[in-house]
Length: 148
Image (cartoon, rainbow, N blue to C red; front, side, top):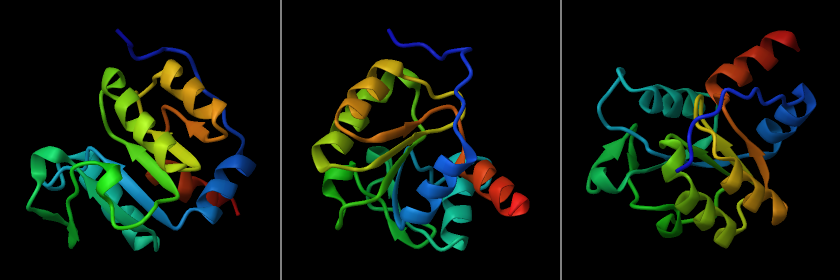
């Protein structure tokens, strides 16, 4: 079983800026339609406000919309290839999402706070993808904007 790690993952501000500059479309896996109490709901809205096209992915919320976007069952069913997959899943549920991202050639895979799966990350990195773990884009982006 893959468990959350206490290890700290360090990513340069230059790398994070590059990701935010290059990414235009995001699949948010684990998107919740349950409103403001859910981090994924707030992060999706923030990313939309910042100008990103965000596709919510959650097989348990099919037939619904989140922030005006149709919910998809997986990233393979999205209407277009995305630049980044942002994962709100338990660490041991990350590998299938990463496998789909690899299959589609998604260049950036982002695992949210407390989401760490080093085996899945290594597999993705071996294909040339850039992986960020245990970080939140809705924290990192405003931090970088404030520092600019």
